[in-house]
Image (cartoon, rainbow, N blue to C red; front, side):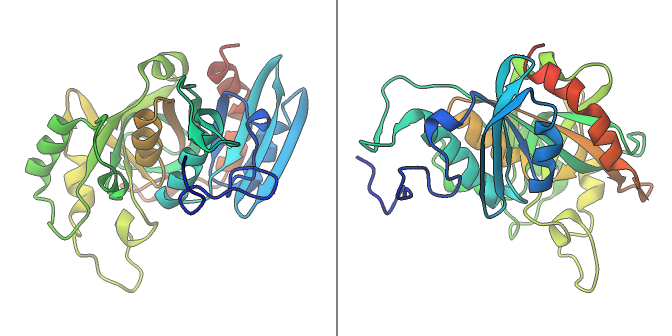
Length: 290
């Protein structure tokens, strides 16, 4: 039995932060950052069967073209993904009444649809990038024992040798996306690349306001790294945690991000919200195999 201090639940038996019960979650979950974006997806549903809101975590579960789907907001950052992915897994793989791990495991499909900044000049704003790998500079997966190691250690070593990475920064890690989801979702209208995940928006992503950077050459070493034909294409704040935790727990994971800024050309999209809106049905069709 998992003790309450390690896995708290609410009075109704729901998982602590998501405030969900197992029957309120679909096996296919679309993850977005912004709670306001949940409704922009779920308005395309035939019907919404359950709504829940707690802090920045908003969930709508319903039916899209005959198939069940949950849209869930994570807020920003890998710290939130640590909560969300663990509790999503608990909903299907821990008996919430006995608090024991189920012998037969359920695999979820977890697809993040978000926004990012491009690190390659040729990848323009308002284009989607499918993350063939999540590249974590956030340090999250270093807190978990690699008992079922999903990290690509050869790629990690190659990057460390290339980057002359500072010892004071979190050790980076690389995790591959689900091959099945890449084939299904990452069509010719999307770029494919390695997505870097930072634990902050300013310094960890190389932005300078008033504080100088400890590793100002970070963008340059990322842009110039190439491994098995893939480059580091973009930078955001969630993918490495989704891939690392999700796949360690046996779930299928993929991220597709809309480029809202090009960090090389300094361009920023003024109409990315409309581009995202125009892409929703196409994305849901691919995710749910319609």
